[in-house]
Every structure is written in C-alpha cells, then in structure tokens.
Image (cartoon, rainbow, N blue to C red; front, side, top):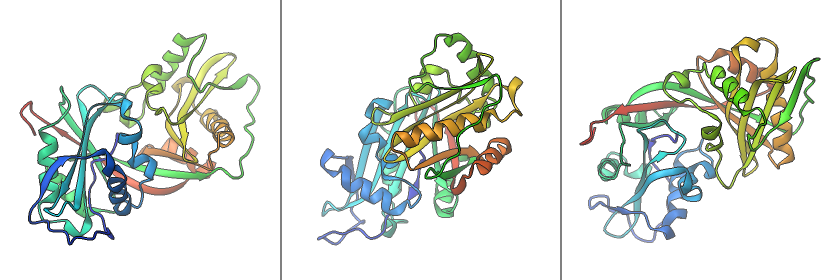
Length: 321
C-alpha cells in the first residue's frame, strides 16, 4: 500500500547544473538507489528511509516491479518513479509512485515519469493505488488531475516504547506470542481473523487470511504477533514487524462477539513488550480517520498523531487510465 506521492526534493547536491528542459526517463540503475532514496526522503519528511526503500530491500514482496529515473542531459537525477503489484494487495491493485525534485516541479518531469510507468504496469492491473500526505495540497491536486480519487484519509500514530505497562488480562483471558502466525487451531484463528475485519479498508477489498497477513512483513523485519484467547478460544489478534528500531503494526482486530472487553489494548500491550525486546523503541500504526474505536484505543495507549495520508485509487482500462 505504498503511496503514489507526487512530490519533490530540495537541497540536492550536484556538480552539474540541472537542466529539466531535456528530460530522459530510463530504468533506475542499482548504483543510483541511494541517490533515489535521498531524493525521496529529503522531500517526504514523514517517510522513514526503511519505508521508502522497501522496493529495493524487499523485492520479493512485489510482482512486476519497475523503477525509473528522470535525468537531464547532464545525467542529474530530477525525479524517480515506481510501480508494482504488492503480493499482499487485492488482485489487480498496483501502486504508482512518482517523486519529483521540488526545484523541478511544474516542468513536466512528473508527467514524463508517470507516462513511462504506465507503459510498464504489472500484468493484470485494473486499479492504480497510491497516496499523498494531507499537508501537501499540491500533490493531491496533481494526483486528482491525473485521475486519482480519495478512497480514505489514513492517520499514522506513534508510541514511544521506553516505558510500558504490563498487560493484566482478566480471568479466562490469555495472551500468546505468535510471530510466525502458526497455530494448532489454525481454522479457529482464521475464522476469528475474518470476522474481525469490519474496518473500512476491508470494505475496499483489503481482506487478509493468515497467509496474506504473513506476507505483510518483509524478510528483513522481525515479525511480532499476539493472539488473545478467552477460555482457549482465539478472539483478538495483532501483527506487525520490527525494522530499524520501529514496530510497524500491519493489522489488529477483535472478533465482534468479544468487543468492549479491552482485548485490543491487551494484545497491543503485549506486542509492544515483544517489539521492545526485539529492539524497537517506537511503534507505528495507521488507521482510517473515521475508525473511531481503534483510534480511541490508540490514544488511551499513548499513541500520538504524526501524519496523515490520503489513500488514492484510480480504475484503469487495459490500454491505460
């Protein structure tokens, strides 16, 4: 679910003066990955370097991955772009990501990158997905001009894991670490997981079984998973991964029949402890702005809002959007 940022980059260093009047788009060479990450991260203040680099560090998570760069006649990088189908995404969904150096916005660089990516979309693509940060109105305006519409407003919240409470489950409730998501009663856990998905994203087709949930964690991450049981029956789950000192929570849910008992807080508290033991100093989670229940729980746990993203979508025809 990588965003399709239509953004720019400031403060680049180059020995040659950039000349955007002569833009050439080509495959991004491996030896320029670092420069591409520098470009992305310098412009996107809310993005971590590990998130920006997923396409480089975890290519196994994507199908049909294409990375391009836009350069001028001096070879100076003016922008980059990426498209791929995430293996954990619904069938037909491919992300489109365009990042342009800030000083070169409005000069056709993004348009050139986008045109190149549209010629290399993963096979079977029916919808483009992406996003723009909610404090970047220009990017949203450009994305809408390209045909994207807003599917949801996602809020990212962060928790400092320095001081954590111990979970205190009531009688009959037990908490179990399950980083590999392997269970003796897998069918029961699958039923609970499916029932728990009443979130807005599920209504948009983002439904997960255990196999797809496992696919949300990259090979370089340490998986963190916790299941709560009531009298032995699975009733709640949270799952994510630790990388570069941060736990990224991919999914959390509670069986509707067992909501209102504080189970979500308990599984998250246990996940926080497990993540800290794995080296995490912070935890991040993203929730749709109108998902008031989970956002209230996050606030009570100490999470604070860091940023927001407009998740975008665009249906396309086989010949292009």
